Image (cartoon, rainbow, N blue to C red; front, side):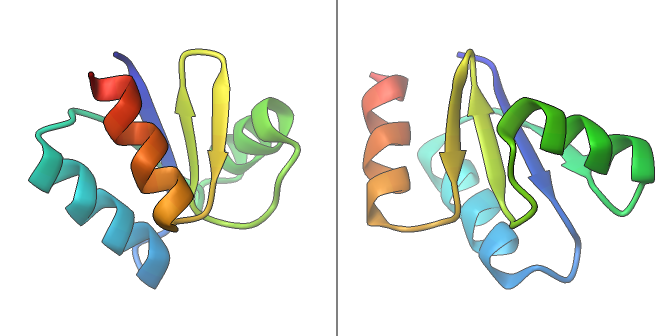
Length: 77
């Protein structure tokens, strides 16, 4: 499962999501959207400006909440 997380260092929800992924043993690639090119990529892939944005394959997960956590656990298997 390839997971990409678009985030900012000062984003609380982003940090909670990354902590959750680590606790679940889910490897991920972090993309810092402070870089304009990374931010542009995130918007093109997700259509979103809010953080965090998690992309698993072709699936886009928005924010950090119980629904996102459940879906990530489900995808993990």
